[in-house]
Image (cartoon, rainbow over all chains, first blue to last red; front, top):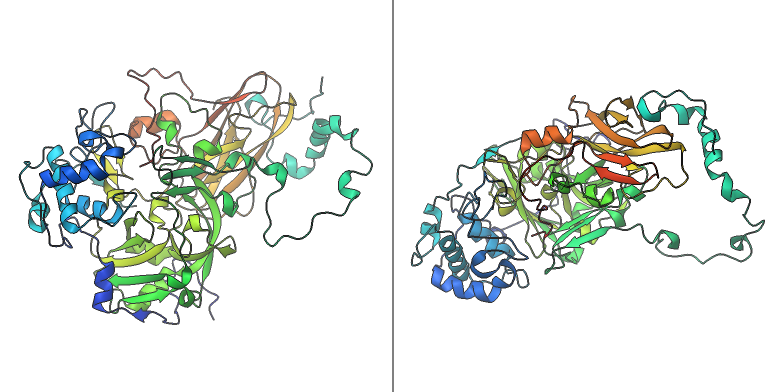
Length: 163
Length: 437
């Protein structure tokens, strides 16, 4: 009988096994997350110069000129550090992993037309944001290998509290 | 001038024995409070003189309750990004009505046809598989009454100036429902999850494509693929047709509009588990993966913005307590700002990781009083005073504010949110950023 379903049971309750097998093509169309070591980063590339154009068109209205923030998050240009009374948590001061930028921009941005950027446009925006935070030079191309190699300034700024 | 009941307080400023209402002493008190209006009632009111309204296919609240609503606080530009608060101060019992469950959306509420929706389970599994909603509805289900609380709930408490918002519009990013659905462990056993899988990365089907990582241990313990909320299918704003429920854990992990679960060795380190939903400490380091919502309580009546219009007399102090670690063991109430405490009556049922309603009678003598509640859960964790919490965590954590809430009652009966001590802190008083992003 199926009456004994309770949390913390040793063995999962048996189910009717109604999953429909997913082939590798179906899986890869859903499997678009980017891991912090860069696993999953696609082909394509972009530079800060290209990213600035896209930023000014699609991102500036919420995030302000140069990523200084407005109705949307401040992304760059922190004057305050994390130990100051009013810390500024920007990409440069706070984000621990650069590939997360690609993951987040590609899946969520821009807010009014999410999912419409090409992979190279996402690389370009990522490059621009890293440049604004003085993490890469303006002319450094971002692609699957260069993005994965970046060590963010706050990489070691987190305490994992697994509870 | 009303006469006081001959009752002996059990703690300062008129707190009475929690069992008073159960013993029938309440009848006297209530009669005393409402006597003024009874004489005016018509012998046969209009409701008894004409046939009533016809049937409705889906019932709505009484027209006189139209101000019992959520309080939405959207981003000032993108109006579909933000949060809406449950009016906890207008509700009783332990269950939140579905239409008043709090909301936190990162880019609006998708309208999803369940016939078109699939859940993909993939990654470190023997056989990746899609599950349709129709198929999931055939699975053995279980129900759990539990709260869901946004990690950012009550975060105005970090501000140096006490918020003047009403209790629910300050602490109401938490709600409690009966969630029903398929134990996620059942589905994972079917697809053959591998030993090396330590995390599940969940993806939502909203415009934000919300993603976040959940430890497999929690999933195997009590995660639910929820299809129903309080007996009916999920509301769109609560993840219709399918959401993840992780009892007692931070709201953001309870991914709505659930679309994919990927079994992985490591977390994805998504924006919402790194840049957000982490707590910056005074050291400059930030706590990450703070999943459990610690014990918390607040008095919902009387609470900020209310007025004890009827003057001195017998009142019921009532509120809610909950803990992500299990059952609430005890709630103590003080009417003298924490000088003395008395245990409140806990309303049955007291369930793990669920709202627990508490009540205690209070004889207000008309002089200023300071009301507080303090929850203790079954692990022995005691809800901290604000000063303790700030001393331990600083004021820039943004998330996980669970300090004791203090309401001041003045001699006119006006109830106001206050902090214990005058804040002697330097610097400007900038409020926590209210522009949800």
